[in-house]
Image (cartoon, rainbow, N blue to C red; front, side, top):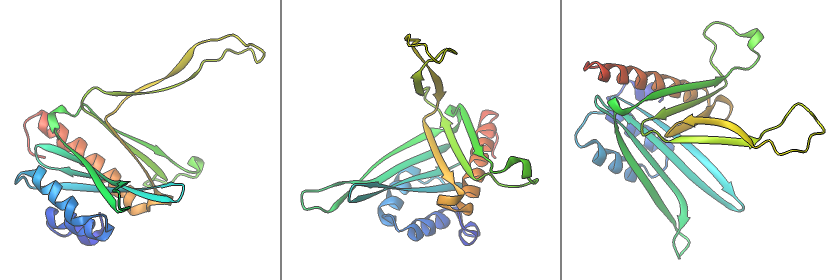
Length: 201
């Protein structure tokens, strides 16, 4: 979220940011407004991704909108094409009550940690949310300490509970995008804590 948009009412700030991104702002706004059903957005975060496949370029956007009672998650992309070659936008949207959010995880990468200065921002940030109990497994062949061993030791890995994970890089996305993601994660955490105790955050 830019400095200019942060001084506007939340709904106007979101619309302005969608227009600046230029990724189907009218369509995206309509989807979000329909899902809000009159609720007032308190905070939002817009994350854009670009994927290159052979000679095709596809864009994907994630729009997160936080209200007093829920988190709205919109995925929209233009990865499919009609018979005439024109792009087709596909979307999925989900509303998650704040009381259902189990975890809000921030993972970061700090360059040159020996030279770290208080208040310094990480270079990369992964923002993960979990609410439905789904999990992601990363598996790799297990190995023993013998470099000449050819036995099958099965698989080892890590199981991470997450329904949504976004990676933001200061180098690729810009420092403002990373700072905005970090602040939004804190806002979600604060809103979840307030919802758990029946308070307004």
